[in-house]
Length: 65
Image (cartoon, helix red, strand yellow):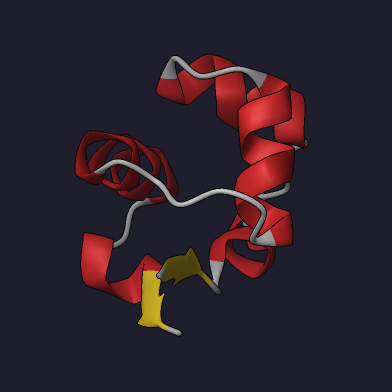
C-alpha cells in the first residue's frame, strides 16, 4: 500500500488547511483527511495533483508501506 507520509507536513509548511489544499487540487476535504490518516490509497493522478499544489515531486509524497 502506498501512503502519503509527508502530505500533512508539506501542507502545514505551505500554511494550507485541508480545505485549501483540497480546493486547489480539485479534491474534497474528506479525501485529504483520509489520505493524511493513511485510510485510503491515492490514485496516481491524485498524487500528481497534490504534488503540483505543494510544489514538490510526486515521489516526495510517497512511501511504500
